[in-house]
Length: 533
Image (tube, rainbow, N blue to C red; front, side):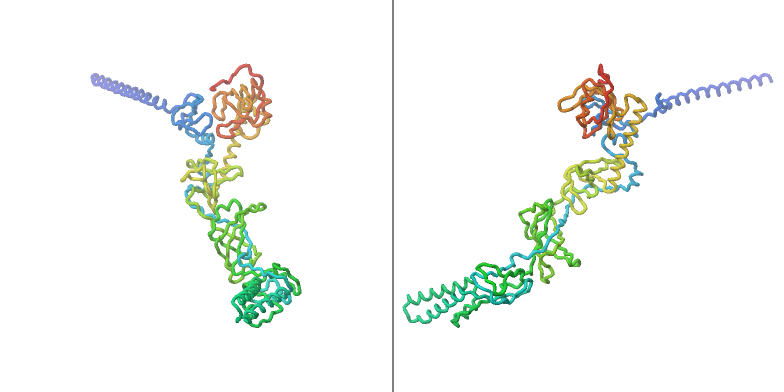
């Protein structure tokens, strides 16, 4: 009995020892595994979570990144960009970061830049004028008097050969008598010698040529030679069918040789003189199709070719006249009417284009927002060329296939400006809280900029200031010496060599830093901020 109890106690002890040993071993293994796991997940001593490095960026804010650590030409280390800092990196690279949700709310629409043929239509105003080649003037070549008017009103329609007026001229009557006498002499001297007949024929031909040079018709000359009697008056007829556009003849008036008494214009064809602006004249070519509209006939469209581009420019309006010919069979087109003209421009082949709405034109430069990746946009200055109804040619700044913002680009631009302003105010407030005396915003600073303190080392003749400044937290710059421009010459009175100043600066162009405000802090005895030079 005692032996059985003793054996039971021994077995129980062994079981307890085995259980305890296994528990102790398990705890050691768990602790070791837990310490390894804690070593990879426990936050660092400063309490910040370990972050993943995405890439390294240029310390001077230039658009240059590297996947590995490196130094710039000045010997400065590239700054690491961690996961979650894409937005600040986008801002430092001159890009705009907007969340996907906000992009959808703004209604942003993208379209790829593509090669297209610009079908541009040049619009101009014009006026209808008579065809100068169908305008005729009736001007007698001798002196005389108007005996009778058959057409006595301007604007009256006349047919070809219709009598216009009758004239009396002593010279004309004398010339008729000379011809009649010469013609009778030729008949009377048929039996005379050949020399006598030749002389009489020459006299008759000379008299006849004089009458013809005065535009006497063949019918009138024939009637004169048959009757042998000179007519007192001569009838002038219209040389063309048309409208009397000018009438100076008055019954009973005396006229001189070459004086225009009537002007008759054939309006079966008219000209449209369109005034094309100077910047569009290079797109207009003779032979191009023109579409003409007139307010008097809003339901009608007239078409015709461009027949001539005038070689002169009207200085007052900076326009070049362009001639379009139109048929006027129905007589609807009347000289003096105003017209709206559309000219088809000659295409120049496929060119790189974007929608017109993609270009933000400030008047001084043109900007296009290019999508770098989803929710990230880069403003680019572009050089534009020809325009069509809805597209514009891009000469520089955008590549074929790049996605550009064509809707809500002004909202994105406003969003980026607002973020920059808020960030600037936040930086200023943070600086005031950290060091109210030394980091206060310099008096007179305007706009959003970066603040720093430094010692003026040199000021050259071109107003370039060399400053040995301390770290710049807003740009993640270390202490160093570098050159700055000044916004205006009035700042130079605070920027004397050896002076310790608090200053504010901005980036005007890429890599060009400009001091916008400065405040003296005292006289520096040494260079406390000397860094990379």
